[in-house]
Length: 204
Image (tube, rainbow, N blue to C red; front, side, top):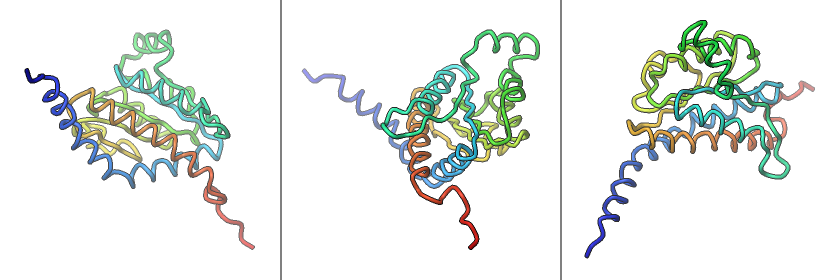
């Protein structure tokens, strides 16, 4: 008897081909984001990350990647997730509304040399968009990881760097985002290893 498992597996892989190929096409955009992130870290900036629902756990995962030097000799980099503190989130939501839970924290915690990464499964999370808008207003480098067609975040040009996981399946969007933020971490360290790349050469 032929198993029904293999056709299901084939279909699951097939749904992931186009989003993966699209990500490969965004290689230059990802590299530019990494380079500018490495410049900010080099100047003493920190990473601030936020997202709703499933992307809230991605925000926490990203922070762990940057603050925990899992490869010997790599730098631990300062990072904070705005989704970690339930008391803060619910307190702001009660006082200012859910749309402001990230923007309000950024106004208190962020500095102009910092980096903000906002994650949204479809690009239509108002509080993520408001967080990115606030971060940009404060002078932060902004990076948006979104899904679907990019939603309002992509349409409005809310972030300095935008990477779209081109799928409407939240599971596939998460898989692409996980790949992207591991690339961000790894390539930031690649740029750190290039002498003179992050500082303008002195005029002799």
